[in-house]
Length: 298
Image (cartoon, rainbow, N blue to C red):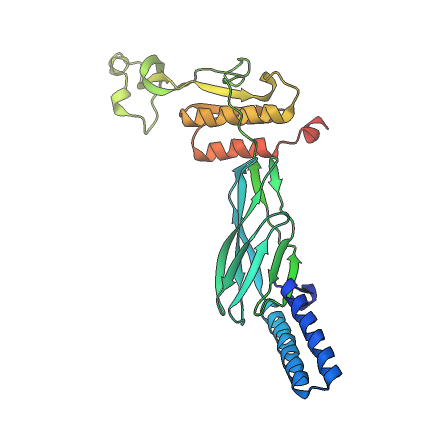
């Protein structure tokens, strides 16, 4: 987003007010004593201040601000919104950039250069964090006037529920999806029977005894017990507080991921099949962050 002159407001700083007060006193004294040297000094200093104002306006207007990204965080943590600032055809200028109710930071943008900044903001609740307008201000070069603007740069950050530690609670059993269960996968452990040979099957699995008896070409099927998995069920938690349930599920999910377990998540109207790995973890955390109980109730 490009900052235009119409968006910029101008206010005198404390030093600027003091400077203008002194100029007024010098002007009154020069008029009272008819002092030509005093008039020259007042007009010289006033002209410098006026020129600096237009110089500051020229440097601030036309700057480009682009939102890059924001890494997901947990509720209560500080999110860092990464933006790029480009001072196109501008001199080296110092600016202050901040988000609403945040301290922000001062930085210097080089002449005709681009700078990448991380603007911190505190998060409070899960969901999509939209910090609001980006505040940009500058007192360059003399500090007599503050020029600023509020830019509506579209910035969002995904906020996960605050993890709450506790013992793992799985949903009731039932087909392996409702709770802890064991699944069967292809493996060398248990013989399950014979199946008709298909091109591509391992030759070592051919049942040669059946071939010698003239029964046809069959291959042996074996299965092995796969790892157990847990289903993190929203309804299995005994609490009426939706946010507490989501926080408990988040804590259980992180614990299962640290222990390299296979897990799934079950929310009202949402079922994420058991899995593992970073991509599965992010998918489950995103579902917890964006869960809307009002939407599911309707």
